[in-house]
Length: 98
Image (cartoon, rainbow, N blue to C red; front, side, top):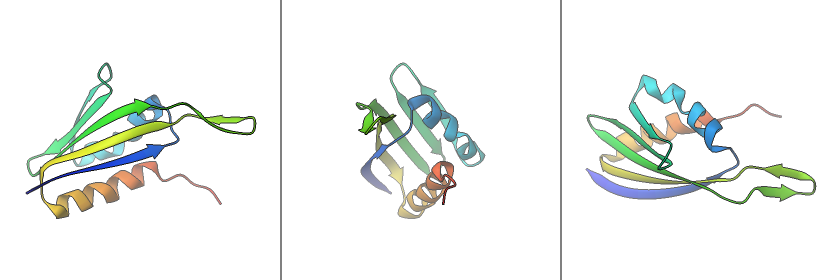
């Protein structure tokens, strides 16, 4: 079992971020504390605590995009479970484009 941390800055609103986590419910129990801007994601061999912090919006010319700092703390999780989580998490936020 391991403890580790990671951080990502994402161009998404907090509300949209929380909605985008829905597909993870197939694999994990998710508890959201919107007041504390915290998300607890877990199952028997995995636990991640996400802390959400709003940043100043990113501005590119007249375009303004929300910016959200997401700090991840993995507790009592093995490497394979953390790797599975990252794959699943990234799929939740993959957007079409081209």
